[in-house]
Amino acid sequence: MTPTARIMPKPFRPVTLGIVGGGQLARMIAQAAFRLGCDVIVLEKDRHSPAANLATRTIIGDWDDPDALIDLGRRVDVVTLENEFVSSESLSALEKTGCRLFPSAACIRTVQDKLVQKKALAAAGLPLPRFQDTPSPDDVAKTMELFGGSIVLKKRRNGYDGKGNATIDHPDQVAPAWDKLGGGANELFAEEFCPFERELAVMLARGKNGDTVIYPVVETIQRDHICHVVTAPAELDTKTRARAEETARAAVDAVKGVGVFSVEFFLCSSGNLLINELAPRVHNSGHYTIEACRTSQFENHVRAVLGWPLGSARQLVPAAVMINLLGAGPGDGAPLGLKDALAIDGAHVHVYGKSASRPGRKMGHVTAVGSSAEEATDRARRAAESISFGREEAVREPIPSEKRRASR
Ligand code: ADP
Image (cartoon, rainbow, N blue to C red; front, side, top):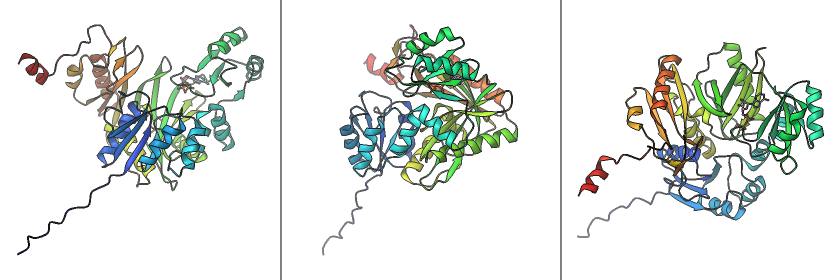
């Protein structure tokens, strides 16, 4: 009698997602992709980046190097980005090889230059602060006169956490602001200063077919131009909420975005809602969606770029508050006080696994949920105050198994 032939299952080839960049945003996209059974390949300069530490594989290389991008592209099904600071020429070269890239090189080209982005949004009839191209310091002075008040001079490209901005309240400040931002070598433009009452943000996921899901409008509070606290949902009247949602949808439609996008707004005392900027990626103001929404921004980004159905963006808890955990000083990336933070009911701690802390560097975040904004704020504050990175005394306590090994 012949032995019964064993039917071997066919080897399973997971869908593979390529991510350009290896920071915390890539790490959280990767975590969502793994949950859906994907493999993840990261392209990043640093061997020990937050995403490289857990990716299926890492290609060590420069984002702007077309050869490195093409190498990534031929190993994966779809390429996406964790930030918009990648050369759009290199992204076009990648697309020309037939690689599927979302958002597309054309979309990134429009969004990564804040002036081109604003022109595209203005052409779509969307509300923005007045802005003006300023190729020389003379143009900055003229723009100040034209707008009749303070202006914000901004780098067109590569600005983040306010580092590419300078506020000018007096004509004497034009020259120092121009020098501070490296005017000439860097292209700059000017925008009227908006004495806003509040800052709002809307995250949304847009699929290849234009289907869109919109997350709740949130309020963001910046400290030193860095997103510090996010409260979801923002306390708003129904009209303003609807206007923010529809404007955000129209903004992402205008740049034909695919994936998750963030649209940041200024809410003025007049009730005017102006777009500050669009980010073509998952965003700090959407981290709260991991715990608070039916589908996180990271999972919806993976779904959108892979062409899978989008999940509901509905918030499942009455309130959620996210607070960023920034490095207090130089040191390693280990958190001090983690146990105290974990003892707080309703608070969820995220540590990014960065190898070094620096003052002001984003090292992790806390999201707390609650039955009211007050309760969520109190929980998030207490958790965030318990944890620190890069303080003198932040020597990591050995975890129990290490203690055992050490004592053997
Ligand atoms: P980045 O792209 O570096 O995050 P933004 O241009 O979004 O920089 O500016 C960072 C912060 O600076 C904004 O969240 C807001 O608080 C402030 N800001 C930017 N532009 C203006 C403006 N036109 N008027 C008033 N405040 C502004």
